[in-house]
Amino acid sequence: MSSPNTTPDVLIVGAGPTGLAAALFLADRGHRPRIVERALERSTHSKAFGVNARSLALLEASGVTERFLANGRRMTRLHLRRPGRVLATLRLDEVDHRYPFMLVQSQEDSERILEDALAERGVNVERGITAKDVETSAEGAVIEVEGPNGMERIAAPVVLASDGAGSTIRKALGIDFPGTAYDEPWRLIDAELDLSLDADLDPDAAQIFLVPEGGLFLVRHGGSLWRLLGNIPDLEALLPPGTKVGEVEWRSEFHIANRVADRFTKGAVHIAGDAAHVHAGIGARGMNLGIEDAHVFAALHDRGELDRYDALRRPVVNRVVGQITHAMAMPRPETWPGRTVRAAPWLVPLAFPLLRRKAQRWVIGLDHEVGV
Ligand SMILES: Cc1cc2nc3c(=O)[nH]c(=O)nc-3n(C[C@H](O)[C@H](O)[C@H](O)COP(=O)(O)OP(=O)(O)OC[C@H]3O[C@@H](n4cnc5c(N)ncnc54)[C@H](O)[C@@H]3O)c2cc1C
Image (cartoon, rainbow, N blue to C red):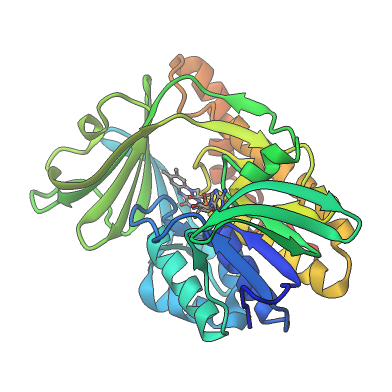
């Protein structure tokens, strides 16, 4: 059981999906993690909406997968479209796996279910505690935090920094975060859509619309609430005729960067999730790769093999982020001929069964082995 007054065997900084999953995987292996979080409450905005087959498989033993499945919606196909017609459909339900789909569920729900499962194991997230600095030593690490009792120092033999893309710990350790930043703004709208006027929109599929100026990704959260995500100024303009936009729940604009930290371990401190890698939403990998990092971290810690963490995780993440960087060519605002050539590696697989199977497995995160 975690307690602020005892030395934890692992201190986790940040209770997003990565930190929560790491605490859960550790608790289920009989460890005593302590998890601190800056925010007083969970965010109600859902960034990640897709939980892939890999995450569902990794969370199975904890019982969390069962709860995710009871809560989320199964998305089994992906249409690649131009306005007015479907160019190709990728069927995820053809994949030979027990979870042949992407589970659509808000990140808020994913975090709530993970945090509840953790609390049932006697590990409570300590909120309102902000990590400010870190020192590593032969015995482990000391994290300087600011919380309700002012400044404190927490010593731990092992630290997992899952404190998000702006990671204080990564910066304090002087770990570089190289990569590519994209200039154009991306837009997100979570809105009610009324399809009752015979809109040409498959409510059970995700859709990618390509136009010369860019692209729009569209998926239904549940009920009549949809997510629109894209890099064109007016996302609503690409919706098929007959679609009426109702109440908007969330509207946001952001910039994308694909980055991977140049090391995932420094002394007794390991970094995971967005603290270690950020990338565009293509493939819905951010949270899912974080859950995978958490699994590998917990399994290696349990075996006393954390010295393998960087070597096991960084190549996998580098490969996936490289593929995403390549896929970014598809919706970026350049000319049609150029984009068609670059889109070929993504369209051609749809015509050839072996390549199609690879594409299907990639989309639900089954493109590589986890390694532990
Ligand atoms: C629009 C959008 C859509 C997305 N869709 C998907 C998707 O469908 N599937 C997917 O897998 N991913 C998706 N992602 C990415 C996903 O949201 C992130 O990859 C995921 O949240 C990363 O989880 P994390 O726990 O590593 O980091 P975070 O979620 O950022 O959590 C970090 C936590 O650390 C806390 N923290 C930060 N600094 C400190 C500090 N100094 N001290 C203490 N606590 C601190 C923060 O408050 C936060 O709670 C999407 C992202 C966006 C923006």
